[in-house]
Image (cartoon, rainbow, N blue to C red):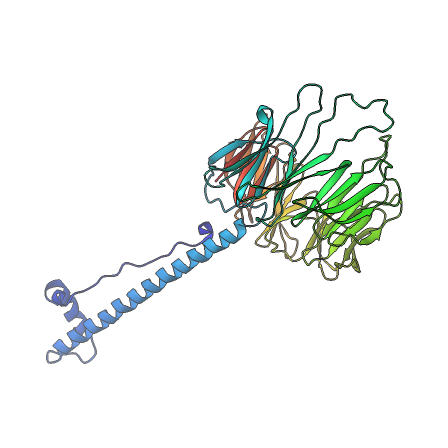
Length: 488
């Protein structure tokens, strides 16, 4: 990152030729010789020769130093590029922006998942012009890599369709898109067994867009979680129980299945619908009772009592953490064995994992704990929450402020109160904290503040209907209601 590298400094050097020993150059040489201890007329020539030899060694030394400085500068620049490349490859962050970015390209996008990264491209999902289409674009130029028409919007008398796609952190993993078949508007009333439209799945190759498979899922889809090339899905059954399955992403082959022992779907709409949460290590079916399942085998890791909500998140070391209402947080090994009690649920933040501690938002303070034993390393009273980290700095955000904390000791580095409430989490490029801020007059600006000092570096006008600010493939992506804008 060249912006953090000091500029090389060099001194002017005068090179003297043998011929220059006559005239001015010779006078300088003779002056030097006359000043040598013991010098006289008899040894003046030798003194002059010694003076030039000394100059020659000085010149050689300077050349060596300048050459070494050039090599060191090249090594530093190469190391900076490698560091920037490594940082930009992380999900959700941006390649360092050393100057005000400009718009490189934009594309139509909407729906539940308007934009994501897959196969080295920026993938958009759009339902404009009556047809849902998935497209992949070159992140740098915006050149169309491939496009796949998925499904047309149904005609009058049918419910609308919305296509959602999902990818994984593995750029070569399948791109999986799904949508529920539209039902007839007001259809099914009075039927003893209302018709539940199936959900269609389409598996696409992220590099070329080729179709790798298609399959159908019966039942009311309650949620899905990607698990490598597979997907874990939860569906509501006719008897109000919930079926959780891990299925092959290409053809829907069932890897394992689990059915809730009691009804969890409330047909009267009094209770919230069950939710499926988690990752490719552990998933949780959160309902009036919560069950945690091993994502690889389907084994029950924990079955909570009725009325107790359990939230779950993965840990960087392969374990997972849970939080239970009225009980608090727990760090667990991959097999579910309890490791330590903690005050909250660790937050998932984007960035370079340069802070070893797990970060938690516990009421009006942020707490950092050691992942191996849950020991608290620091606490910080704050209304802000951690959202990202870079080079040991934790980026913080609240409804009306943004700031940064030293991840080693919890020291607040800076905090900036915003002129209006904002709910769009900041992003970072490793040099700045990037926020899409309202100005109180219906406009928004993308503002870059120094990561460690909070000093404003630049600002840029962006659309007022910004929904999300994120990094995909190292590019800064601004998401609005119906378009994605790529800046660099």
